Length: 349
Image (cartoon, rainbow, N blue to C red; front, side, top):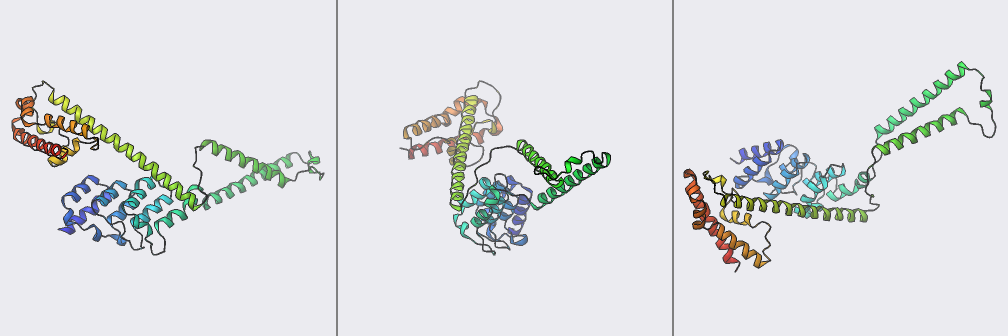
């Protein structure tokens, strides 16, 4: 049975089926041992997620117990693979992949692979190349080829002009103090052409660049600052998401409970705090964005929810509009949710 689940796990990871992966881990967590699920080259599913830059699936595996310290055939952990992606300049690889792994398991930063490198070594040794990229070998060869073609073109033009107008400009070959040989002239023209081409490239690809760190200490400070900014952005994004969910919940309650429509209400038409989960989880979903430290506001909100989901009051507002096939299920869920809010209110006293 476990082997079948492991095959499904690998298939979902390879194809990026994160919803199915989440459902599999949630319902069959006890049948899977993520620490022993290994594939080609001793890779774990977490290794594969890092190789595919699927940061959402990697975070999901970490949530359900994936071990980020397990090595592959080269001794690389998942954090080693993430560090290599950052070193290659992958878009958002540092924020989306490297930081979650590092925060989840800080001890993995000290694990060395068979080459004796830690994830921090892989990140630091290539950091200067990341911030100060140099021309590759192919670019150098292409530039040399362009230079040869340019010199040949200049030489051919000069020979053609000499054959058409022989000795017409004999004074150009004088050897005075200000004379310029053909080689010097060709070099000057080539330099001017190169400068013009570089200016055009800079204007076409001009964009602000970050000041590259000049030492390992500055690089560490730079990475810490990037980490703090990432945490701030993540917190702001989470607050926006929670506020949006709470707003949708309140709008749904106002729309359904205050409506005079005679349309039958099915189970999915009721503005539950969340469609799935236990009554406690649904009550917790309704409390999104409410600060428990502010006891007065917290108690007021709980009282409103108790009044909103009280079975008798709910029956008065919506009892005649409930669909017959879902009536019992709706009333049972309302009763359970009301009891969950009552327990929270008792605990808040």
